[in-house]
Image (tube, rainbow over all chains, first blue to last red; front, side):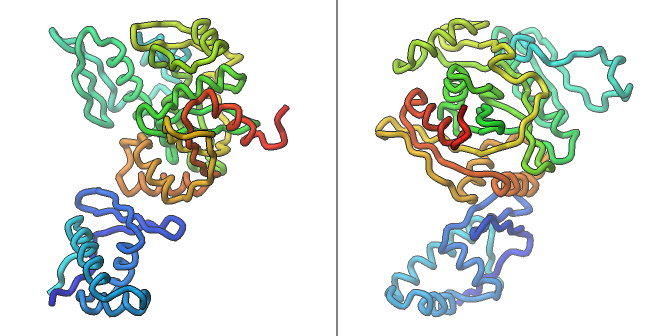
Length: 89
Length: 267
């Protein structure tokens, strides 16, 4: 399973308890929603989808695993399409 | 046309510049056979039809502002309406047609000192940020909104300098408007959200991240990198009170806004 990591050329600007990211190569600015921000923080250490599902299941024990996996998959794809994270192996 | 928009800007011959320094990257306006062209060191400008003098002049003002803020550390310009309320400046931000000009001029007609309906300069190195009037003539879409009250219509009629079918440019005297270069500390920023369906106008606190998103769309500082723009927006949002105004009509919301920002100090 693919592991994801933060791209190294992304600059992070915290504003209150939220995060704005800037991609150095494009200059595009992204404001992360709560889920994307949680994933970004979790990818402080490279992780694959299963590891993220396990981590988020601890934080949201009442949410079915399949719902978590679907939401995480969508958010990971958005972060990857935006060039904010990359596959590292 | 240019000097109708910026009647108070000081204009000096190049060799009379205060410091005598040569102009390194001048802005030029060239009239070609079928269009105007403006070149600016800060950003690319479009070409303009020969008969669209207002757009040429307005774009040239933008180029001049960009050149000015590029000279000073901490300077940015922003698209906003602004009026003085209780000794500080309240900025009104919003997208095109959100009502910045109407709001600022309605407040001016009701006695608040006008600073801007579209653009002003901020010094972010000052605490609180210092706002500088550019004394750009306010412009209004015509016809005025149906709910415009009689005092406002009279105010517009009395102060109209140029009038076209769809727009009027006003000239406000020093009783109503700040002069070129006049400064005031920033007191609050209000994001304007106009919605015809809303009942009573509502002023609610706005979180910093939401205001940063709004500021990113309204900041005009082409000399800054995207990263520095974000940093400037975050700094600005963190330096003052932030509000969102949901309203249907500036004529209904103006008094509530003035009362709110005066607090108990309204004369």
